[in-house]
Figure (cartoon, chains in turn blue, orange):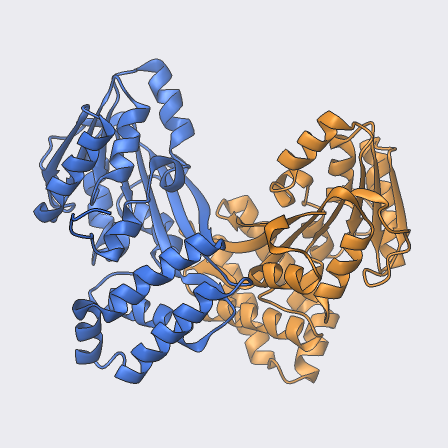
Amino acid sequence: MSDAPKPPAQQVHHELRTAENSAGHVLPKLRAMKEKNPNLTLLDVGAGSGTISVTFAKAIPDGHVTAVDLNPGILPRAQAIADESGVTNITFQQADAYKLPFPDATFDITYCHQMLTHLKAPWDALAEMLRVTKPGGLVAAREGDLETECSWPELAGVQKFHSFAAAMIKFSGGSPNGGRQLLSWALKAGAPRDKITVSFGTWWYDTPEEKKAWAQGIIDNINGSRLRGAGLKMGLVTEADLEEMVKDWNEWAGRDDASLAMMHGEILIER
Amino acid sequence: MSDAPKPPAQQVHHELRTAENSAGHVLPKLRAMKEKNPNLTLLDVGAGSGTISVTFAKAIPDGHVTAVDLNPGILPRAQAIADESGVTNITFQQADAYKLPFPDATFDITYCHQMLTHLKAPWDALAEMLRVTKPGGLVAAREGDLETECSWPELAGVQKFHSFAAAMIKFSGGSPNGGRQLLSWALKAGAPRDKITVSFGTWWYDTPEEKKAWAQGIIDNINGSRLRGAGLKMGLVTEADLEEMVKDWNEWAGRDDASLAMMHGEILIER
């Protein structure tokens, strides 16, 4: 039991992210680069509460991680997570992915996760990431593809929620199917095709604990004022839709045969 | 150049399958079991031309693989592939997945890939696989989920082809979204929930060579008499649709920014 205020469900889920579960395609290359140079510098763009950044910092104990986010409000939480982990080779600061406040060729590795899909011009952010990365360095991204999300059983309220979530991302100018577009964005950012490696990864939930946590996060979001208010105002959902979503997410979480999976697009760009 | 008849495109693609690329979720467990017992016996159900079976046989050189398929016509091709590979610890035979011609508890590992999605009652086949597997053994399956297939750019003819392929599987009683249903099928087959491990994997194509090979296989299929004839007869497609599919697959294969990915559901059941 703790009296500390409970962080929002979305944040709780984001804080489960680590370099191991969210940057698996980067780690083998990072380790090879570390062999040659233990003092690697890594930039994490759109780091949020920084759980991935902190695990990157642990992976390069003689290097340094700079973690930036557009939202300055998240930075104290990120610093607290680093402090709790005893990680000191990390710096947090506010920054806009379109205008990174760093000179050309500053970092060995520049990384982002679930960031480009929220942007109107993700290729411009990728070009910025390429700019601040040293020649011989690495730019890496991993972005979800909401339209590949598949759940079982196929409950109407769960499927409605997925469509609603995709519509919200589209409405704010993002790309719910960003995962499949990473290669095209990288080319548009000016990366040569033969320097780009494409892969696809997955995450999924099927255990009772995972399903309960995931569904509860979504239900809290549906019942929260922000998503609910925006969805109703834009006419994307009705009160009845929202009720059906909550009912069906609860049913999904309680069923032994339920699972949910989604693909992520992944790219590595050699600078 | 060779005068040998060219195998159908579908078969060419199937023959790229190996245990490494199509049974990655099984191999760590198989290796652990082999440590304890080098003489493992493995059954591959719906093995087709047996390329996965042959790589399994190589992985257990002191064990034995039995590879079965409903279609006796494929067995000579499978035997030829084994012979070419110099693999001798393998036997091919005709068998129906619903009525496997083996006593209870015959095999240490029973495996299938892209087989259950084609059946009307996949849980009955899984129950048969459980029956012929020894207590302490392993049943493993990997099945595609066509509805998660995502391609970029989103060309109308490519998307029409995906819908057409899914409709054809449905029409013959199968499940184009089988990948996400594996857990529910395993429970329906009588497997206890705590003996089932779920995972999801991907495959994708993004290099010029892969894209050309994949698109050509599909174009050959579209132009071939079987798929074309069946689709037209059932009213699932028109001649104009088929032309658009060929045109757009050619465009897709020729584009630098094109990619295609799909998820597979995977299960391991401890017997």
